[in-house]
Length: 117
Length: 116
Image (tube, rainbow over all chains, first blue to last red; front, side, top):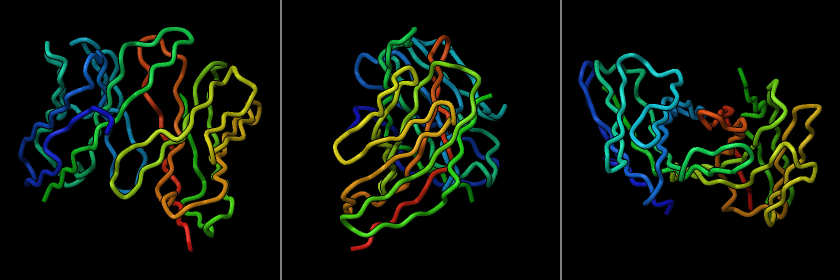
């Protein structure tokens, strides 16, 4: 158990709908990352937040948005869902932003499996 | 942009034997980290081993070791004395020495089957 929790575990919805995925980082971790894993593919970085502020963006679609709240939990909002959005969505957290040679491990949650029908 | 390539979609090994998974990467940076992650059927991402690019010594963790060839931009994972529980997807990942972000860049993975 990494200490990172994600809800829900599974989500089935229809095209055109909107869903919210929730992530609670490990206690004390300030940085949250979201990754998308499509079927049998590697993980693709979507977005990173640090202490409530957006830090970096990957190939995140405009239909997707995220935020990190004052209690440090994060939500990933996916709207106007398409069949191709079906994937496993991972959240990871790390203690801080690493600097220089400081190693900053990312701890992964169990993921949310989204199925769009 | 940095990229990570895993050219072996599937590999298989007999229990107790040794197997090597390949990974190559492309970067113009001199300092970075490389990782191998294991993803069993449960889909949990488990860190297996990491290597700092500035260290010449290859990392080892029990039965897992890497062959890091910086000039060739190659980073292979060797699993010795393979066990049934090693069956999983294995992902190679890259992370630059962080400044604003320390996102991970993953390869497409290698599915490892272990036969008794």
